[in-house]
Length: 156
Image (cartoon, rainbow, N blue to C red; front, side, top):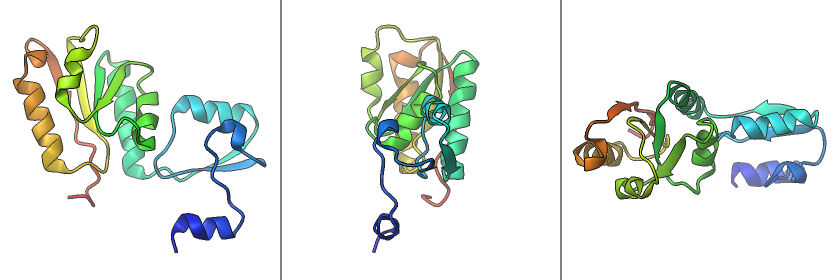
């Protein structure tokens, strides 16, 4: 039996959005959420139990620091994954998520300062290959790159 099944037996329900929250307590999953979503929950006077994984939280803080320091953040990860969506929220609109470095070339404007991190559950060798391709590409020519390994060490 999965953790979610056990929690469902205890009456815990999964909320897909703030409007789905019933009651005055919500638990944030290990994948975390954006600061905007957390603020929206708090504005409704809902207590939060934050179970965000420490590795995910570190990735969130890294993304925020990079964005605040003027870097455009590139997250190597699945853009549709809840962890990645949450991390992107910490970039304040200064980031993108992708598993293919070629998609970066489709951006309207590529900033000169690029910060690169990974979804915490990506395979390390794939992240390394992504970074190498990014460095070798014309995208990185003349750019400042800051690469931070945010992969969970349990994945290694």
